Length: 232
Image 1 (cartoon, rainbow, N blue to C red):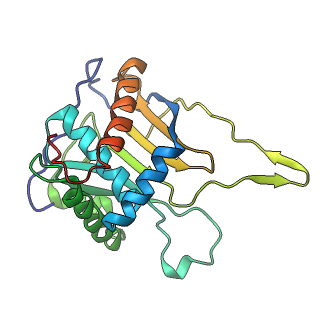
Image 2: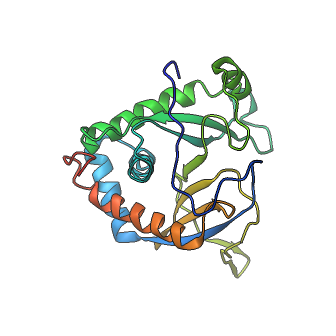
Image 3: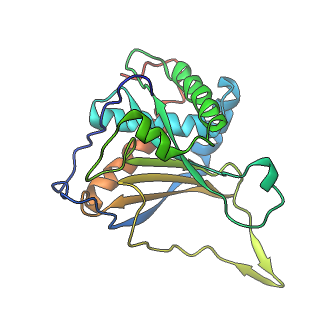
């Protein structure tokens, strides 16, 4: 973060409130298993993780809608240091991941940059976020410092759970508050992939979010040809 970071200005449906709002909801969508299998195969060819592929596509989505080529996304990490590996409890940190989806780059180049940047960011996850914000001199009144959007990819496939002879069924839950203005969370399952989208309802309506989701899935497909430049 030595260089000044552009503010991500996605076009909103409603004027940004003077005071930061966390009012929101979520929406569940499905990514076809056939597409996910193609992504996994392509990741092996590129030498990147599915996380780096999907995060790269998310950055491209944000760049297409904002015009920015310098994007910062909140990324949840385990936050569990080695000395806490055997401790029961929830340890979660969110770190700021900065990437540059510049139009001239091929997706192959960019996906590998995302991979490298993610590794570097995770290796520094113990650096206090508040200290980073203070050191950079960032002041934000009606938005989060550094990032307004989040992304996560669950690396382990969701498995079936049974209690005796009863199978546990995943039931969609609706939230009324969100941690960021826009968040995409990808969870692979055996038969398909669940894409959960959280969004701030003081900024976006459902129709706009549907367009974001549709565009994201389209980018996932288009980036299978990793030789194309991002501008294409």
